Length: 140
Image (cartoon, rainbow, N blue to C red; front, side):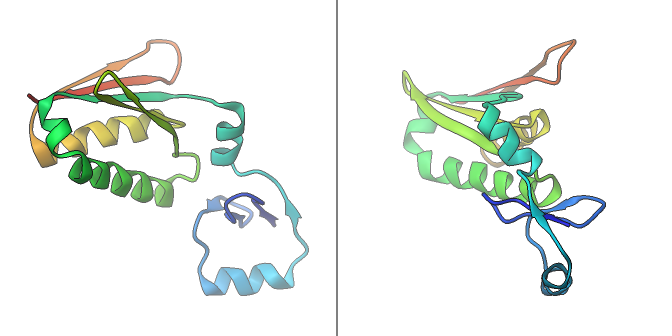
């Protein structure tokens, strides 16, 4: 068994478990284990961007907190399903909110959930060869 020294995720022999339950923690405590970065923290360390979400428009400025809450919820839920799906960074650029993710599907989900909650125009562009998504949402 392995444990990620940064986030505490546990490799149970089949997959990384981001939030291990009590039973897994008891089993883990009995077995010999080593430390290893999980795929999410490895991507963060390498600064491996696989998705970019750009949120823009006048609506963003007046509803920033609600939109941030939706983005945070999607990131939290995404990590439960896939330990590699993380927000790498967020940045303010000319009034727009730019979010870099370590997983292209997380970026896609963020855009879709923001559109579902607040309407607006959503555009998702996939890079042909690599796993990369560029997501843009706008509402004025």
